[in-house]
Structures are given as structure tokens and as C-alpha cells.
Image 1: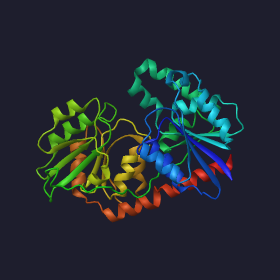
Image 2: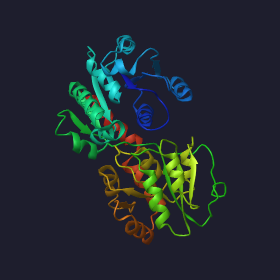
Image 3: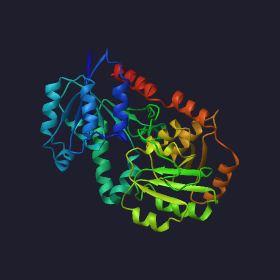
Image 4: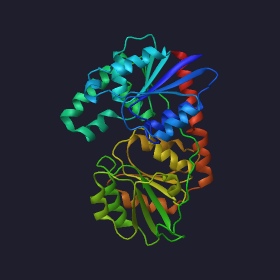
Length: 356
């Protein structure tokens, strides 16, 4: 039995956490004894309880400081690792990666890289701080046994810098809603074409720009649902017209995907968006900004029409092109289940673990 510990800042239901949860759900339990180590407050208690009920040991650090961890000081984490006698440590994020890289352990140390740090850190922290975080993170990654990028596009950025890099695309279980949303409750006609964005409202996701362009070019039967909150929320609301519904943070975005037709994102940088995968699982067409990971997923649909890629200068042209060719929901769902499933992702990681 191989003892493996997943390490993450905190466990919730979305983003990098969903990758961890899908891995845990799909690993062969006859071969793997699974634990989870979380470093900071913020765990979803329902998720923790479900994991524990399914036989996953959950270790929740209570005393760690983010600043000290960035310098490689995390005694409580180190104690849990010693106690667990793990064969593999699989980290997710800059702080877990730094702590893992500083350990004296016989465990094989693997990480998943969830973003293009050269873009993401710059947008999040600004030029000066991003240079520091990139240097710290890259130094840590080079000390690990394996670095798995979440997409080929992220791998293409890092392969020349990290000799231990490979890629396994993110995958998800078929998306399931836990509630029911209706077009009536969001004041959208039943025969409308509905676009949807779900995520953070910040500068990196570029949602204010998206709303601005949608307002300029939408037709009378087209509506945009915006799910999420963030620092740009007020600006987004100010740009919206009566065809845009600002719905705030929603605990069950899949319910709203189920009443939509097209998933739209103007993001400036993505690793391999879980929201895009969820949209595919719901059979939605895609209308995505021209960044490498968005191109990667749309171009994977060689035999299935998934949607269109737009740039800052051709939003209207590409929107018109999207209108001219209808997507097939059943084909899109089948594509996601075949090419971007949690099962195929877990199989890729299991093979990677065995190679260490």
C-alpha cells in the first residue's frame, strides 16, 4: 500500500481544490492510502467531513504563518509529514511547494502547477513582488522530484526552465447541480440565448471589459449572467445594462450553467480553467479570450465544434461567427467525458506516481 498525502493551503469545492478532490475520488484505493494536509484556515467543513467519512485522514495545521512558510518554516507541517510516513507528497501551490522542497524526507515530492506564474503573479502582485515570488517558487520547483503542469500550455512555458516538468490536463467528474435555477427567477426569457461567466471579479479575469463589449454588441434575445464577486464588482455593475444579470457569488454555479447556452470568459491568464471544464460537462458552447489555455481546449475539439476564441480587437466579429454555427450539447458533453474526465486525469497521475 502506497501512502500519499495531498498538501494544499485549504480545501474547498473549487479551483485547485477540485483537482485534489477528483484525484482522491478516482485513485485506486486498493493501492493507495490517502491523506490530506491543509496549511491554513479556510477549510470547508462539509468537504472535510466527507473526506473523513470516506477514509481519508485529514491533518489541519493550526499554527502556521504564511510569511514564515514562504521562507520554508513550517514545523507543524513537518511534524505531520514525519507522523504520516508517506511515500509520496503531492503539493498544490507556492507555499506547499516551498515547504515540501525544504523537507528532509524519503518521500517522493510531486507538485501540480495550476497557473502560468509569469502572468498570474504579475497581475496579482505587481512587477516587484512577482519577481520575488517567481524566484522563490522556481527555486522550490527545481528541488522537487516531479512538476506536473495542469495543461500543455503551462508546460510549454515551463519546460525549458524545469527539466522535471511534464503535463496532465485537469479533468472533472460530470458536473451536477445541487439545486434548480430557472430563467424566470433571473428574469430572462425562455427563448433567449444565455451567456454565462462564473468566477472572481478581478482585473485578471477582465470581466468589466467583457460586460462592456457584451453591452455594445448583444442582440435583443441575448443575455449575460455574471456569477461571482470581487474587487471589480462595482465597476462591472456600472457597465451592465438590462441584458446583464449580476447574480453575485453562488454556491451552486452548475445550476445556472444548466439554464445557459454559452460559457464566456475574457480572462487574461488561466492554467486550465475548471469553470470551462464544468461548462463543457453541462453541454455549453465556449466563447473565450485568446490565451494559450483557452486555445488549447477549443483546439482539442477537432471532431466537435466547441465554440470560438476572441481577441480584444475582434469581439463583435467572433460573436457574429458564434451566432452562425450552433453547438451540439450532447456532443460537447461526450467530448468532456472522453477527453477531460477526472478518471483520465487520475490515471495519468497514478502512472506518474508509479514512475517516481
